[in-house]
Image (tube, rainbow, N blue to C red; front, side, top):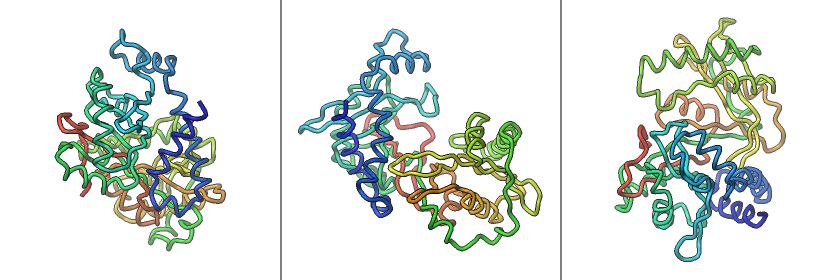
Length: 335
């Protein structure tokens, strides 16, 4: 399926933002995308994957496993879209169709053509909407909201925020930088710490439950194995947790921020920015590596913190809701 993989790469690179194109040569971008798209290619028509996915979800047990695989669907005019059914956060009440790649542009016209074929193909799953990985998520949402072919459920799911490690190290230090240190930690106790912080956040603001998902022991263990799981100390007092792991995605190579959470007494005091800068200092980065992460639009403090240390929005996931579909539950329109 080598030809399909190259088709996926060619389709995806047209959806890469200008920022990423300024960081990477096109040959490097294509290689990065080739690695990421190989996972999606392997799911095309893969009935073993489809059967395992269907059984894991626990819905439609009599359905054909093929229906759960990634499928390449022909579009009017000779184009195509690669799509697959997914469930937001594993929640069976939040089905959507992931449009992995398409020959259509990231415009209302292009997405209308995609929706015209993709939505009928997945009617049996009753999807709430489609999702795309877009170069300008907020801009795309604005265009979709102004187009009568799409309903009110168009919104940013997650921003992808990134910065080259070398450039992040050259940024001015946060005011709390000298007071903050990082100490290597154990995944078990720190996972409990993270869970407590998120529980306190959600107790105060229940709407945060839509995006406030703490990393578990397994995730933090992966960070610890790379020497990138830390307890945040402020004036030598434990204040929170920060963690990262090498993870190449969205056309980038580098490290993903897996966790950054602070106790209530240390939030809003520039500690988060300082902790992020201390983390950047610890990254075993190579040339062209970035530090990136996904941030929900409702998580304004985290987005503000990311931008304050030099990271920028380089893309993001968008809920695309053709008129007649209900839209993703809990989606937030960027503002």
